[in-house]
Picture 1: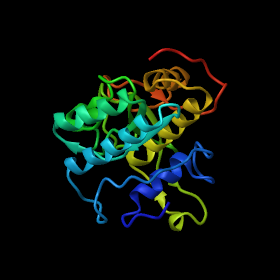
Picture 2: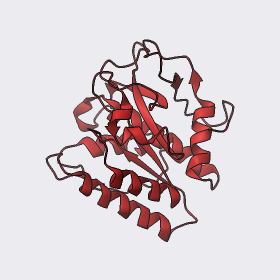
Picture 3: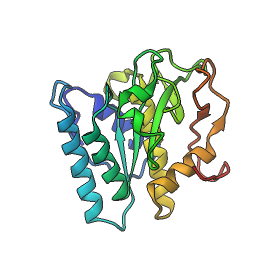
Picture 4: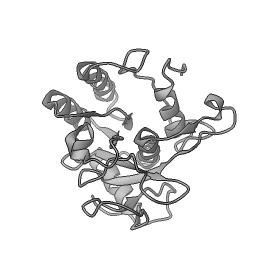
Length: 229
């Protein structure tokens, strides 16, 4: 896929499914632009992108479909929530970044607030890969369902070896793990979410807010238990 002008989506794709640094190295990646080249846009733009993903899933029901959404914003937008729920109903599992508002409640942000109430949507917070502590910028609270590493080099020769951080870097790791799980057998987004949570490491992240679930992503197939969500 081409490198986007703002590089944000490209880095996310490399983490989820890049052949060198990605979790699901054999997954087929489809580039869906939700924002204009300078990295800005509207929630209606995002809805159109989600609806396109949903249409592709409906056209290919025998295939597994996973999407990453590393965009966040303060407030509520019911039309967006409806679009995401339609997509899950069509068979798409979604990994959503919790947002980077310095420990604020993810429940106050689009689209992070949807994870807790919608099976098949996982809201992902960021853990500092070097310290094991929650990243200070990562949103927390009851709407964050799992944490994944962030703040690490992307890899030699990839986007100038830049350090990728933010919950935007954590969410694609969950998306890649969803792709691994759903690649082993045809399952619903909710079933895949249950496998992700069931295999997570419990109480491994430090400095979390008291009302935040302490689960850390574990991506290796066949090494941990599986449980319902």
